Length: 113
Image (tube, rainbow, N blue to C red):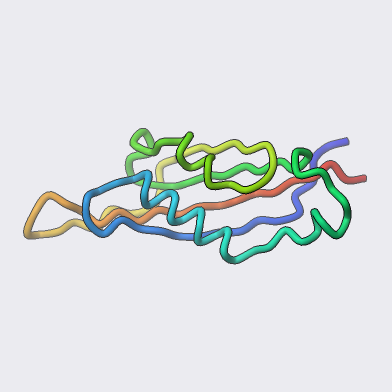
């Protein structure tokens, strides 16, 4: 059966100093995680490994996101992470150190009838 989306959660995160796109991405994913609880996994007796979790993170420099570091913070499921062009870099007029803002979407899918 095709996997069906059961949760779509969004979050945002930033790195104020240092232009660390991975740090901003992780904070965005953590923000999304803090908005949801997958109690249905326990309630319905679903195996955690049967959960599919697809994460998309938007930043201005997607190639600078450490995908494996972002994957490590997801607590359950088979996880995929992709970084795409998005988010926002806010320039600092005094120096070359923009504030990095990331957006994240977490898509949770289950094999349901």
